[in-house]
Length: 264
Ligand code: NAD
Figure 1 (cartoon, rainbow, N blue to C red):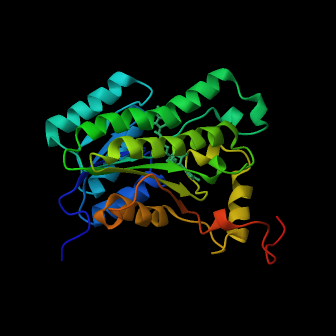
Figure 2: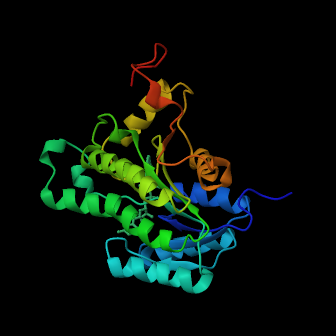
């Protein structure tokens, strides 16, 4: 039986360990026949990322710090040299100073505002431009966002502002690249315990709140996100672009605390 991603090659950015959302996505894609390349942020993560990539049959790993233009150029240079073209990219990257992911948004510093926007927002546009140049047969791009872009969430602060800008970028990129049959979408995932999430104040409370109040009465997993990513990166979603797709056990439709939610 042919698989959904047979014959497709793509890049996964943002794998840190086996808790990463990027790992849930990579597993689903590999299981359905995709050939994967991975970028990792630095030497420290290399020893974690290599064995994971190996498990999915990939030895194509490239170091890339997305705050550095030359590093992004080198990444896509390597992909062009090895593959010539690419069918999809996954951008699962975000960063902010954890000291500002607690307390008040109004206290955000200019330096951390700029850093957060640079790594969590601009990097997707920078990557999209290079990837699009290699998508000669069309393609699909995916980034990761959170409900804190649409509504105030405790402690999410500048990251919420960045995710709102990221979601707007998805829509503008969808328009720019649509004529070349390139689709651009985001997944808005519910809270998942990962390295990046551990920097957010009261994260355990946020997870409990979502578990008790989302229509499905549970939190989502990286495998839930992987399944939806597979749909958005495969031809199953050929008519979908510019979308923010919620994978959050339905939490975004909730108006107030559930009647059966315990006190926390
Ligand atoms: P994670 O810590 O596993 O992944 C974050 C990744 O960002 C890491 O691999 C890290 O190396 C990478 N990164 C940070 N700065 C970088 C830089 N300068 N250059 C290259 N890479 C860099 O955490 P995660 O939760 O899997 O995060 C993936 C994405 O999902 C992020 O955009 C995050 O905001 C988003 N997201 C997470 C949740 C959640 O609850 N965990 C919910 C919604 C959205």
